[in-house]
Image 1 (cartoon, rainbow, N blue to C red):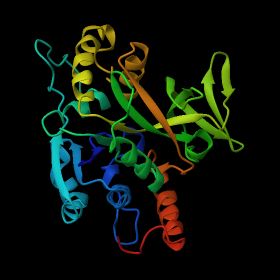
Image 2 (image 1 turned 90 degrees about the vertical axis):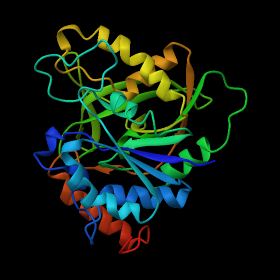
Image 3 (image 1 turned 120 degrees about the vertical axis):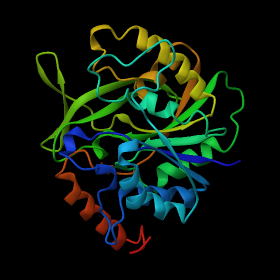
Image 4 (image 1 turned 90 degrees about the horizontal axis):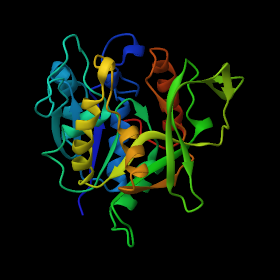
Length: 302
């Protein structure tokens, strides 16, 4: 069964301070984080890559990463566009940015016909996550009802940034390893090596061993239809938030669980995240890549 890797690469990166952060070089030969993800994914058994991008960055994106990936596997490009809305909805006056990761994934509705893994373009996930998700989505699950999803479950303490707050999906996981609830939590910071998050009355301490989502999911093609179905009520209830509301993939998954429409298996990984949230993260990412090459995880030239 063929499996596809889908990159969410249309984000604006407002905290990054300008430039297209998805194609910022971090490797010794100009590699970007996506190059390492593709390397790990192909070794895990994925066959194909789909990039979700914006049209205004297409030329830069293709020259910065796309052409290298095209030499290694089949590649398709789709475009997240502000005006890609179901009838009768129109873009509210003054809205400038697209509608979030859920709407981005809807741009793939005509190119996905099998299981796939979707992930952020500006995060490092580690080889184990790709192997776990590939192995899970490549075989049918017996005895399930509704949509059958999976996600890589990271340890919160392994996913913090030294340069500012991050957003993480804090997960409640059953004893059987199934996702029961996911809570998108913004502004998680590292203080004296431990995670803290905003709460009522000030900052609250978090358990560093909590399982968190890093927005890397294994999904069946039918999940696209579920997303399309949920996009309509999202647009209907935007109200006064019409200029900033986002249809987010983790929120859609959480609603699916609450509605009994499907289930999510959490695949625990001990991999350490790093990414390109802030401009200062680039130097740290370069250092981490050098360490991984020195440790034999990656060749000097991919």
